[in-house]
Amino acid sequence: MSKVLVTGGAGFIGSHLVDELVRKKYQVIVLDNLSTGSLKNLKFVKNKIKFIKCDLSKKKNLAKLLHRVDYVFHLAGLSEVNASIKNPNKYYKANVIGTLNILNSVRHLKLKKFIYSASASCYGNPEKIPTDEKAEIQTLSPYASTKWISEKLILQRATVQRLPAISLRFFNVYGPRSRASGPYSAVIGIFAKQKLANKPLTITRY
Image 1 (tube, rainbow, N blue to C red):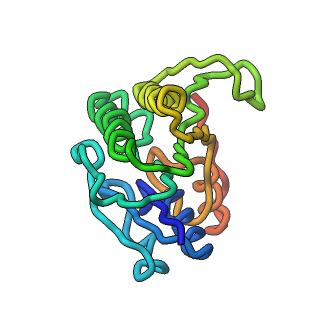
Image 2: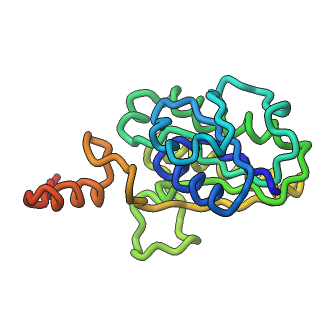
């Protein structure tokens, strides 16, 4: 049975990934500091996974926890643009230092694949929509910068140390367990909540 590590596995996207990995009979380890995720998101699989509460930005050596891991899905990190502007140091620590620590912790493993959840925020305000993956990089916020720096760190390891890695630049992800309230909620989640409550869809102009 293959062993899989999911960082940020108690979050919106991560928990759905964990559900699917369990369904496919993988042995799953979840690392999450629960700053934005919740154990409620893992309630259907809690007895089928190994959960470790862990802050990747502080934990430099995770090697003992990751013995014989085959795959790594690195989803852990902070993702609010406005919050990153107010506290860029916090975002650098969580996203960049956290990524560096997990990379250093798996460097001696014979991984089959390292999958990183990057962000389409690296494109800034693209001229063309749909946006091609080769579009110009223009990071317009500390959040975007930290995700782009982390992506470059991973791809550098892929080139220099032959880490079998891939980076997926997510756009607007939505679905069950996504946040549907508050200033940082995705618009699709807000629309869905309003529709279910038979309320008009609100559009804010700037």
